[in-house]
Image (cartoon, rainbow, N blue to C red; front, side, top):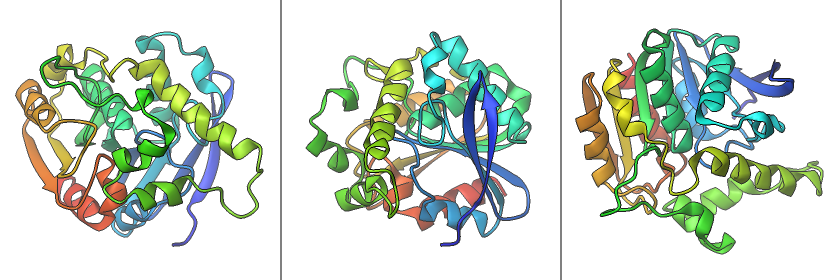
Length: 260
């Protein structure tokens, strides 16, 4: 994998990393739980056909401490909207995974003209007490890799410190990412998104890992029932919650076909 172009923007007084790679129509990608400490194979698969733009989220790797000034759901949505605009993604296709998918869905609901087509990988945002999701913030650290990916080693490799990383700063950055997600999605990932799903007019692809141990499959049906625009569900064999990590080529193929 070759490295992407990296630029930095400032949001609410904090630096935010933007990755870019590829050429063609723009496709934004918002990372899942834990963020993206490094460029991953799914992004290369997408960049082979599209101009892929990957903004960091506040507090996630590359997002510094931007989450510390976001006190409400509205604060988060305004920050994400500002990041997407600054990254040149207004009106583009938008994909997201897990917590990033929930934010992408909200962007498409609140600002419909800002998203052409939408791809959501096992999004957070809903809660059904009869079929609750697994709370990732209530788990032991050694259980997280197996909850995030069907192959836990993929998660471990993504989170491993790269050569030359500051041995003190690296684990702080990873902990900060979990804290940032918890600020908006704790408890149980519920942001009352069901109230805003009917506002989503963009054609929406839902992608679910067959072995997802975080978000039950029933939530895919809830998203399909709630979204006003056309929807399609793709189930990815051999994939867990972060299907794009377990099966990057299959997930990229589904996203590229949907946003063609």
